[in-house]
Length: 157
Ligand code: FES
Image 1 (cartoon, rainbow, N blue to C red):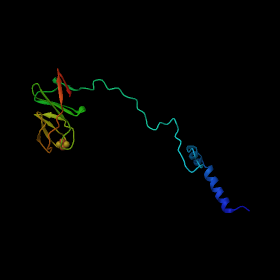
Image 2 (cartoon, rainbow, N blue to C red):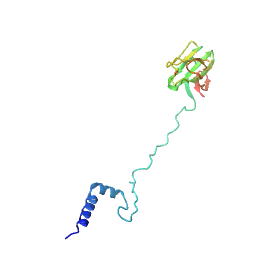
Image 3 (tube, protein in one colour):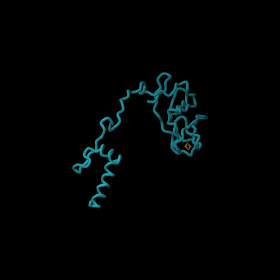
Image 4 (cartoon, rainbow, N blue to C red):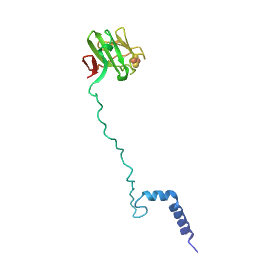
């Protein structure tokens, strides 16, 4: 007569070892059931870290052209939303540039009119000459951006 405890135990082992999950698990393990230590076999075709081919520097990345001098009205300015920059010309031939990000809550200013750079969110206005606050709620000036003017080209420095 078979030992019921041993027979039941053997059946349980077979049920576990013949299941598809056990086969898959054992296939992935090099030392399945041998010495007690296990190592995981990683398929050689699967890279551990993705490789990204080196990209060449984009042409013209040293100077970032913002506008032509003729695009900037005297006594006014232009918001270059795509670059998050405002370029102004407070007096003829003198250009300045500021971040277009309002210092109040981070909206992008959207208009230059009547000598100020205006934020649409809560009404802050900044002076075109130096970016200082003309009207709050902003309490800090717009950050100045460095530019170069070469011929008719205005570029970020
Ligand atoms: Fe510009 Fe509030 S974010 S006024």
